[in-house]
Amino acid sequence: MKEAIVVGAGVVGLTTALTLQSAGFNVRIISKESVSNTNSSRAGAIWFPYRCGEQAQANAWAMEGYAEFEKMASSNRTGVSMVSFLVLERLVKHDMPYWLGGVPKKAIRLAEKNELPATYQRGHFIAVPLIESPVYLPFLKEVFEANGGQIEIEEVLSLHELARESRWVINCSGLGARWLCQDKSVYPVGGQTVRVGVMPGVQALVDEQDDSLSYIIPRRDGIILGGTVEENSIPTMPNMDVTRKILQRCHHLQPLLGKAKILDAQVSVRPYRPTVRVEQEPGIRLIHNYGHGGAGFTLSWGTAFDVLRLVKQAG
Image 1 (cartoon, rainbow, N blue to C red):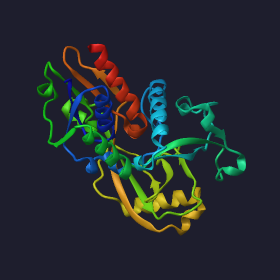
Image 2 (cartoon, rainbow, N blue to C red):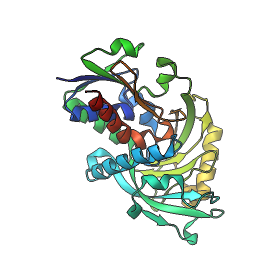
Image 3 (cartoon, rainbow, N blue to C red):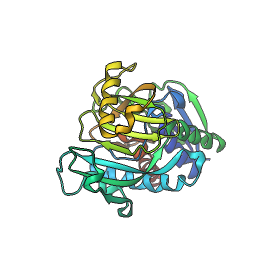
Image 4 (spheres, helix red, strand yellow):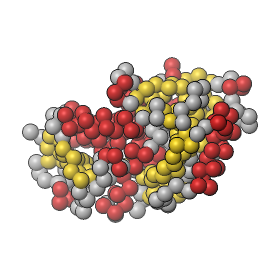
């Protein structure tokens, strides 16, 4: 049987492992962290190709992911649902927002002026997948293990030592690639979110022109409010002053949130890179799949499919 090792148990690693399994591979995941302790487990996780390198390629990957998530939304156990998401623009910089190429045209509606918060010039309502990470990641893990997959918690020190003539190694180590591959173009971008209690009538939305990246994501376990964009930072615990500022910004966008009850706050790290790296190293059965930035869930299926294409091309 064909064999593969996937390094990393975040959403990119799990999705890549499942994609290889579906093609008949016996797959093992090796990860420094358990699925429940990865940065993916702390993500707000709504479909949006935010800051992820070359946009035409990112939109193509995002479109593939959109189709997969849309199918998964038919089952409640996946943690995926289709929601209305309002993408706001304070300033109209281009006739067409960069992300429109990744969304089916039928899923887009231009917002009316009276549907926009004060000071915003334009907005688009888009029907997008909401991926609730506390449900979705355990679901992927369950399917992977039910298909015979194994997850080993261990730190990988050398990708080349794992690679053998009879098996593939897929590097989905995220920020770990900075050290594992000596790829200094990968760098950490810290983020903080606040989770408040469920409230009816709250609209999912994002202002990605805001330097702090303001967003509101209603989920079953609460409403995720964000966020921050902390270049070259690896935060270890939430900051109370940051929590206060996030609440103020989101209250401005959705006045209903003035009555919200704070449940908790979380920090995470996004693995940024100028472009997402999906390529095979010459002369060895090693494929890299990392650098997804703030769009790990959004691009996960598209890049996983590209990994499989590279495997098949190599024969």
